[in-house]
Length: 354
Ligand SMILES: Nc1ncnc2c1ncn2[C@@H]1O[C@H](COP(=O)(O)OP(=O)(O)O)[C@@H](O)[C@H]1O
Ligand SMILES: [Mg+2]
Image 1 (cartoon, helix red, strand yellow):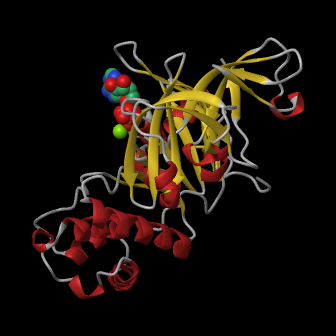
Image 2 (tube, helix red, strand yellow; image 1 turned 30 degrees about the horizontal axis):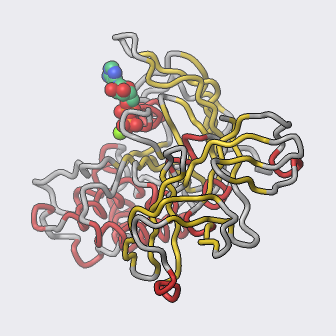
Image 3 (cartoon, protein in one colour; image 1 turned 135 degrees about the vertical axis):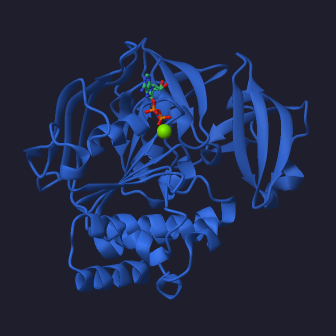
């Protein structure tokens, strides 16, 4: 990042009253205009991170800086931050425009200005023609747009979104993901979104912070996380990844069960004798016609539309998944047969410490 971050968390920890560590030493820098997702399994601390930034929860230690100024001591309404929650939290007895106007009214914004800003916000979320509708008459997707409009109308420097799309069904959700990304690009506002859905995070984020157990395991672009996961957890969490135990031989080759892969030591950085874990993507593997390769026993061949997924097992018991084009279907071994796997030309395995 070249310019100063908009939001910085410095060694932020949260210990709850019951002694539970919600967050451990979180360091996070987010640039102005970025769309960053916090991704991880349930209970890993995503919501707690947002609540600490919004001020609904006080950090137990560490600093929260916005535009370089400490905001950790400010109450939520004094932070230039808005939050959109999973359950929309719209006011059912108000119409759409009243819902969106609420935050501005509370601040005593002049009426004409409220009218103009509400109109603009509804335009942005595609609800300009629904201003006078009661919220109760709207669909789930429309209510979520009301919640978004209500948050952006206050022009926050930072918009926090906690699983904003998780109450929507799959097809609407996919459509709203694109809308959300486009809205963020048009506004130029910094978005920090919590999700447990990796597809959602991968498709709309500039960067993703993968969390586990109250810590950030890795923060990187979607492609970087996919191609170069930094930890075994990230490798196993993002996409489908075959994980194989391996060992670096004296001549730098990677020994895996039943075979070895040539890879220069400079490329993996581990010394001879190191125990490692290899990460191999299904699309980076192919069946070897020669007997050379990683021997597997084929367990299943599954139709996947554009490709066929072959599921097998190596001698040491790890499952191996590879995707082959449908055009190769005729040559595939049957379930129960032995086969050998090799890396496709140009594919590079991920090598992590065991
Ligand atoms: N008020 C609280 N008191 C005690 N533990 C809490 C409290 N809020 C959250 N936790 C715990 O902190 C961890 C992180 O919670 P949360 O941030 O809500 O997870 P996520 O949003 O990633 O699912 C969980 O183990 C949760 O049970
Ligand atoms: Mg949560």
